[in-house]
Each structure stands twice: as structure tokens, then as C-alpha cells.
Length: 326
Image 1 (spheres, rainbow, N blue to C red):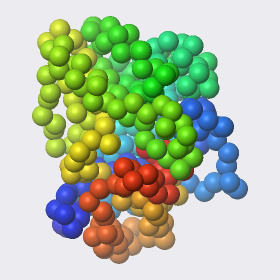
Image 2: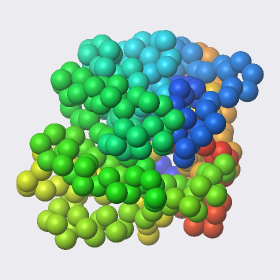
Image 3: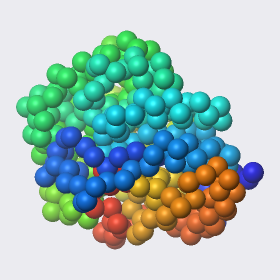
């Protein structure tokens, strides 16, 4: 079957698959008031996830990232990992987590087939960590990072959202940490969402200044691999770790887009900041529906736009990042 491709010739081999909207942190840039369910949530079942993964794998998907909310809050998270890993067409299986359950479960998840893990750590100052996340769990999360390194994950990444006036003074601490620790540190520019215009205006910090500083200090840009995300990655001969910058407001950011998103309730999102999701759930009930599901994917991709409209302040349906999976 032909690989997923949009009208601009971009090919899509990376799926970010959300498995829950629920999160137990209250990050100021995402869920400042905490998670509030609207009715009883009905997230994708294991069978539906299996059918979804099989269809995407059949049309060229080679990398899947399990996202949320906080994906590890699902009691069957290990089963989900095992299910996705069992598909031999999926070459890379990753997840993004706040690290809350990582210390106790890193080895179990690795043994189930998970190979890459991103942990959100927005500050190395425990007090600032609490201020940003709303949870006094800094030590718990850091022990989880150590557990992931010990478990043997092929890549451990740290995600840190850049926030002017909050964690923008943390760069020296982060650099000190990765000098002798083999992790990928990724700084992510704050993106405006429907619930956060005032917050965005107060705390947005462009990554360009950090990029200039890194280059001045001898960091070297690395050419991205085919399955890499949108980060601009940098390495330094004196550091074991790497640094990545995700700058969605940079010129041509969307030109190399290679990922699609499916929400925890089975909606396809062509962009994180799209106006609406396309329902797939009606075609996830049996394996016999795979052909029709693939036809729908190909058809919808022809509607994918060249770029997001963040520069115009259009944030689409995304009220907060937990609703689609970031």
C-alpha cells in the first residue's frame, strides 16, 4: 500500500497516538486548573488501538509515540506498549511522560518493548519545578530519569518548555547536568493555545537566542535523521548529552512535517493546531475495516495545510496540549 503523503509531497511515517486526556499534573502552560473530565471518558480500547496501529503501519508508519495527557496513568499502559511493539513494521516505539510512575516501571516498560522515552522536566530547581507543574514531585521525577537510564533505553530525552520570567535562567544548570549525562535535552518554545493567550504573551521566549549562544560556545548543528521530529539538534565534543531546540515560530518550521496525531477518542488531527479532528473510530471496530480506514487517511491528507497559523494567532481547536497529545 502506498505511503501516506499530502498534496505538498510531505510523507508521514510518524504517528503521535494519544491514549488518554487525563493528567495528574497542573502545568501552568497546559492545565493550570488541573484535569476536569467532561462526562465519563471513553478512550480507545486495546482492540481499537491494535486496529489503528495496523492500518498506519500498512501505509508506512515506522515510528509511534504514545502520548496523553499522562499516558502512563492508563492501567493497561504496559499492555499498550506490548501491543504496539508486537507490530514488526513499527521500528521505533516511544512515549512522553511527566515521570510520575517512571521510577517503579521503567524496567517493565522497557521489557514490554518501549525503547525511547521523553520526560518533562521544566526546571532543575525544585521550587520552580513545583511552581510550573503544581506538583512537588521533582525528586520523584529525577529518580525516574535515573531509572530510565539504568533500564537501558536507547534514547532518554528531557523536555523543557521555555518560559520567560520562570525557567529562563536554568540553562547553566541544564548544561552542567548533561556534561556527564547521556541524555537529549530539548527546549520547546511556548505555543499559544486557546486557553493561554495572556499566558503566552507574558511568558513566550524565542529559542533563537539560545541557538545563538550554543553556536557561540562551540555547539555544532546535527543533520536530522529521517524519523527525527522537528527539533534542531546540537552536540558538543565536551558534553555527553545533546541539546535540541523546537521553535514552531521559526521560518519553514512546517516544511519537514512528518507526523500525524490521533486523539485518545479516535480523531485524526492533521496538525496540532487544526480546526477540527476527523473521526476514525467508526472504522476501528474490526480488522476488516482496514481498507476503508486507509482510504479515509489518504483522502484527508489532501486537506493538510502547508503550515500552521500560529503567527496569525489562530490556535485552532487546541484548548490545551493535553487534549490532543502535544
